[in-house]
Amino acid sequence: MMRLFLLYMKRQDKTNFWDWTFRVLAAAIVIAVCIIAHERDIKTPPAGVDRTFSEMYGGATEVEWEKHLNGYNVEFIYDRHEMEAQFSKKGIWKSTRKEIAVNEVPDEVMKSIAEQNTGSWQIDDVYLHIAPQGNKEYYRIELDKEMTGREKTLCILPNGTVMKM
Image (cartoon, rainbow, N blue to C red; front, top):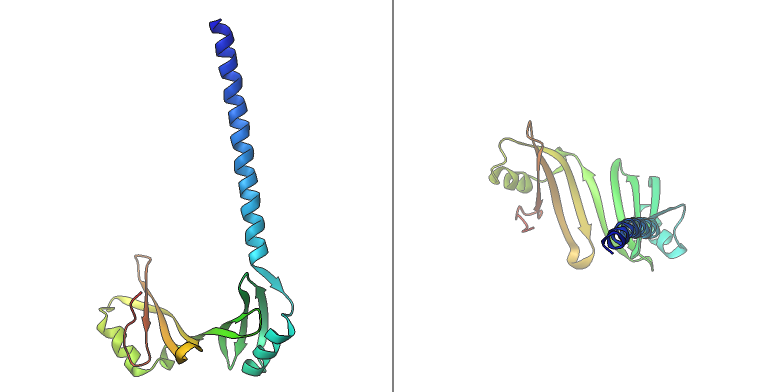
């Protein structure tokens, strides 16, 4: 009787292992399909989205579109700046991010950076974020600490006020 029980348990372990392996692989495939379905490179967006983009950024180069669940994302070069903009499915502009040089950052923002005890930190990237809601505009400053690999981000309004993150 004991021998039959041990044989049964051995078989159960193998069955559970393969059942578990199948479930993990199936979940991984479902996740991969969802990611691919949510973010997809496209050649051209719908006419309304393309029209809004062209009105705002006519003459943009190196334009690359992606379709997302909530709308469209476009990366492009405009006025010698790398930029990224988001649009709704209906073509309504949601926001723009513009990479800028440190010398383009307003003095008030630079003063605010200095007041944040960033002495040993180096400015890595600076972005100007613009959104139509309430004419919202802020600077996103990405800082790196040499030799440690640590990173820090500051979000600062044009008047120098540091935003809470």
